[in-house]
Image 1: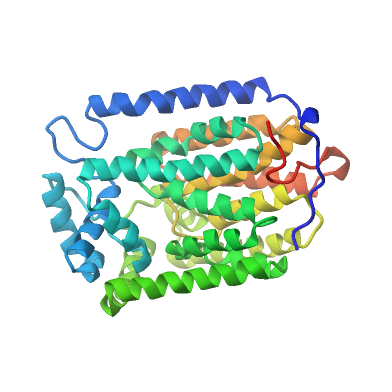
Image 2 (image 1 turned 180 degrees about the vertical axis):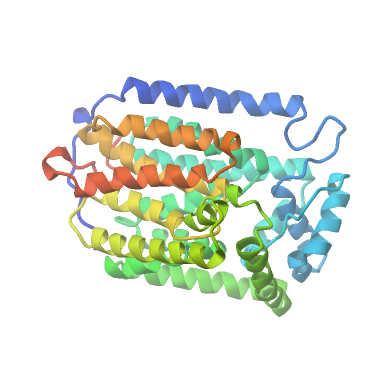
Length: 408
């Protein structure tokens, strides 16, 4: 079982540090102002000529369109996808926006493809943003959680390209928030996360280590049910296409480097970015996987506070996958939310707020570097978690109140 959390009265909560509050407010204002301005300036969704801008969301809409037209298996065909995308956008582009998700995610794509492209884009971003905001509010335990969520630097990137970072973060955040008190709902969140199979390594391991069997089996049932429903809806051919194209996708992105290595935010990509071989990259990646998995098992079996365990698991999911882009780092907001919860309850250590500022800088200014600065940002958060866990216990302060008990 997860270590119990000691309650802390709301009246004892410390005020939000001014640097943290001010920084989050500035970032929120930037985000809130950017997208209306970008729409009218033709920087978002459509360009000045009225042509669709080639960004990631186009593969969701085109895959859904193929499913609606009765050809779901063609969603994984790169050439078919590109022809449809070029027709949709009204212009060609270099490379591919390939569809590589398991068939259950076609339910989401098919629903969105019923709408015009721009409407679907905005609906997807808005609908996935809401549960992410709710999860962050629950994690932090105070209204400040809304602001922290909206200010997280990757919000800009994820919204700009219409990716699934909000959805992923909301499922991981929901799973972690609900685990101590609502294990069935927690398991449902985790089962839905199976649309991102690269996150499937750590969660079962940690749940077994923590003896969270209800969450474990519920997640398994939900994942299997989703697979069965997608098989009934989209046929055996869709699963065959997924398996067939998955190996080609891995070859293209993890061997050939079709996406520049600087765009990926893993230790594998960092090694390749620095000129290392694929073999060396995998050696570092597997060393990272073993290290993170071992540390998480030890942490989750320890008496450390639950918020620290949850932050570590959210961060660990990012460290163990070689295939990771900047928008995936929305999940890092979940870890930051739990760390902020600890700091607001027991006090921040002197280095923690500057470190969070460094993390934000690395995420915001990634375009200036063109290097895996997101991986460095993840390491910063990992270091904060490790210092909280391994540092002198006397400095931990009060444990944060259990999820759901704080009212302010």
